[in-house]
Length: 141
Ligand SMILES: [Zn+2]
Image (tube, rainbow, N blue to C red):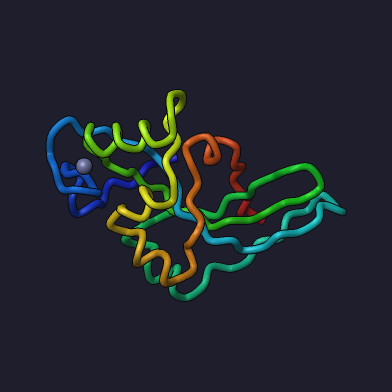
């Protein structure tokens, strides 16, 4: 799936505005459409809200299904890219200890879309790993 790069500030750290030593982190801003027990194997699909449609040309995104045993959660997901400079990233890693970079909601909220998206119900942040587990809903029916 295409990652959107309609960011107004693609070459600045979203947290501090620095343009040095930038790193990019794919993530998703998600809105939960439905959570259902998987009785029948069918997946419900909630129509996009009017506001989602209004934002769609700017933000794009698609409905995806998160599957976990016995339960399916449908999300509408905006794919985005968080830009952090080396300093801000170091601070995150140091705070969390060594190992994989695991960004928190406080980092994701630095993204220019985060506030706008939150207002229309997109209030979950999905890491690259979580995004990788999502399965697109078949929409041809
Ligand atoms: Zn920074």
